[in-house]
Amino acid sequence: MTPDEARIALAAVQTRIAKAARTATRDPADTTLIAVSKTHDAEAIRPLIAAGQRVFGENRVQEAQGKWPALQAETPGIALHLVGQLQSNKADDAVALFDAIHSVDRPSLVTALAKAMDKADRRPACFIQVNIGDEEQKGGVAVADLPALLAAARAADLPLAGLMAVPPFDIEAAPFFALLAKLARDQGLAGLSMGMSGDYETAVTLGATHVRVGSALFGQRG
Image (tube, rainbow, N blue to C red; front, side, top):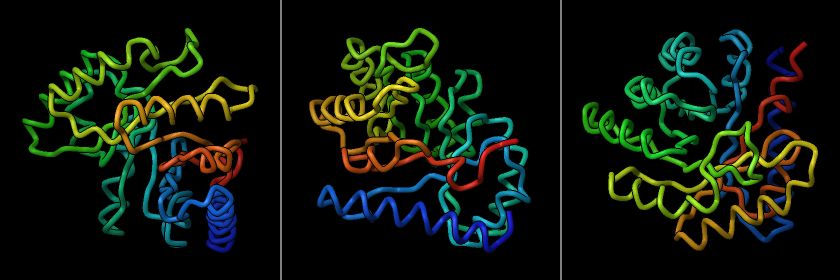
C-alpha cells in the first residue's frame, strides 16, 4: 500500500464513521477506530501510521511482539489493542504489550490478567467478550453467564472498559449490536467494542465506542 492509498483509505473510513455518528446524533470523536493489522507486516503498517492512524489491533500476542516494539519506537503515541483470543499463559506478555484487551471471556483469564497487572504495575483496559450469537465455535462468555463474569472481574479489580462482541457471519448485525448495547447499559458499562469492515457503520449508529476495521483499511488479503 502506497502512502497515498493509505491516506485515501483512512479518510474514507473516518468519513463513514463520522456520517454514521451524525445520523445517530453522536459525536464522531466518541468512536475510536482500531486499525486491525493482524497478518500485515511492518511495511504494510507504516503507510497508515504516516497517514495519522495511531490505534491498532492485533489478534495474537506473539505476532504483535514481532513487529510492534520497533514500530512504536519509530512513532511514539501508538496504542495497541488485543482483539483476538488470549490464552491465560500469555497474560503476562499481553499486559506488557497492549493498552487494551478486548477478549476477556472466562474466570481463569480474569485471574491470570489480575496477577499479571499486579506484577507489571500496568493496567490495560479490559473488555468482556460476549458470545452474542451463542455460537459454539466462537469465544466469549454466554449472555446468561455475563453478570457472574463481570462480578469476578470487578472483584479482581480489572479496569473494565466495556463489552465486545462479534455477531454471527452473514446475518443482519444490528439486532446483535443493539443487544450488546443493552447488556452494557444494564451493567453500567460505557464501552462497546463492536463492528468490523462490513458493518462498522451500523455499529456506530447503535453506540459503538470502538470499531475494529481491517480490510477496509489494508485491503483484502490475496
